[in-house]
Length: 215
Image (cartoon, rainbow, N blue to C red; front, side, top):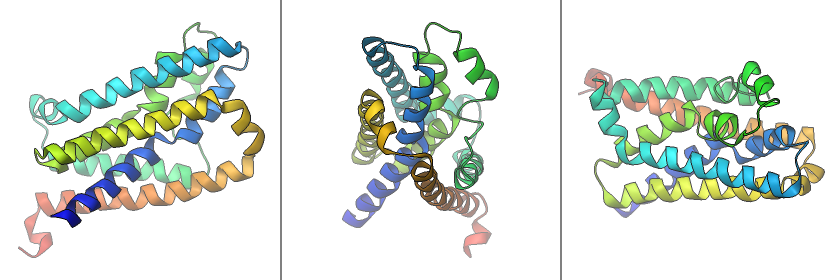
């Protein structure tokens, strides 16, 4: 029992942290707030992380209800979410920004908008489709366990707080982390995300098709 909880903690924390990717969010934050003052940057970071946190918490608590509402089985969502995460992981490995994070159009439009905290920072940069899919899959894995649901919420909190801290210290981070270093980090995180994605798909297939598991 204790081993299952530890495994779930490691899975939850690693998958949510990697898919949110605080470093990538910080680098985009620096680009989008380049013409703002210090106080305004701090406010954008605070609002973006707050909105992203609320979105992910809602799906962490109500994910199964949302799936039931649309008649989607958790196995189908687990497989679909795994495929989505696999694509994101591949783009991270090849040091490209995932299109599920921010499209070129969204990036261009964000340059002329007054408030970037909700769009595109909170959605889709921090709480994008990948993060939402991961949260719902983990919520289904919890199987109603209060402890495991608390682990998911704690993982979301840790990832968002880390993102917020990095954004508020973005100038110092950018001055110390060059392009080469950020690419290496992204590639390593991408490889881990691919492994998690494949595991999601395997679990979904085994559950949907018991014959694959030798049942």
